[in-house]
Image 1 (cartoon, rainbow, N blue to C red):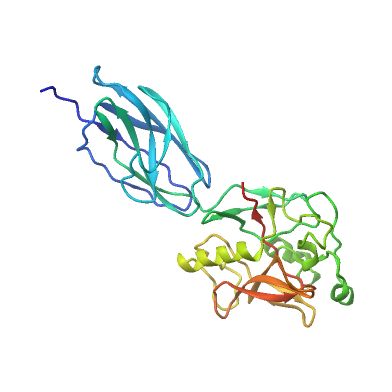
Image 2 (tube, one colour):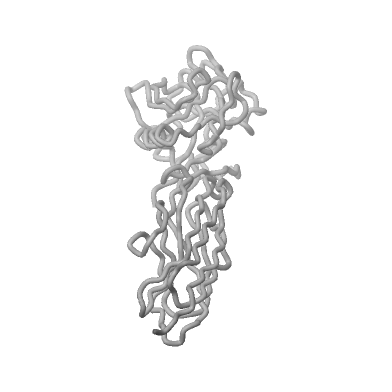
Length: 327
């Protein structure tokens, strides 16, 4: 009986910023070639590139298809998700795309041969929760975060213009702020020092296309979320037991920011009480209207530290977090 040289799969994998690496080797595979992974690189929060090299060992064995299969479960096969890169021997690279942020994956190379399908030992990697930085029309840059299929800004918005360049008025006077039904923004306590760490406060008329002239305050390709998008975020926080609170700035208890959302307690500008709740509360607008005078919001409070949705008066000044448009 003809003997085959053992199939040896050398593994190299790349973990994103938030991941821990883990490699499990298994050299008890029946195979027909020497496969080495190479040139592994982190492309962004939803992709990873894995290079490989297959050296011919048995002249009588052909490789009809090669690539990498992957899954959220151990020991993926060609029946799971896979990326194909042609056939034959030599060097190649595959890019695994559309990964969900903050998720652990298992992957291993495969080769379909005239003797059957051969697998290498698997690699384990976690997709990075942080994505690339984006910028608004005013030149402010923001860290982004991938959370269960959604991309969010991990910082409060600082823009003073819509993304078409139209300026948004800064309103300092309390009477004017309380009585306007047009877009407006302010710093907390009308003090610029809060802009860097907390961003600006906006009334609801700034974030809703029906009241702002069909404009968008978020960077191009991003938008202010609806209540449905916020509810999806909330459900992930509960199911995965992740925290949205930032690691600093809270008056009583700081969070772990395990989700990467980095919810900072930036307070609000209330029509009744003025500027309040810095260090104790974080509030973000949605575009979803409730009544003619109110709209839905996402909030974090120091007293309970869990994300909740509430209704706020449209004239109040709240923070804004943008979410990426669906591709």
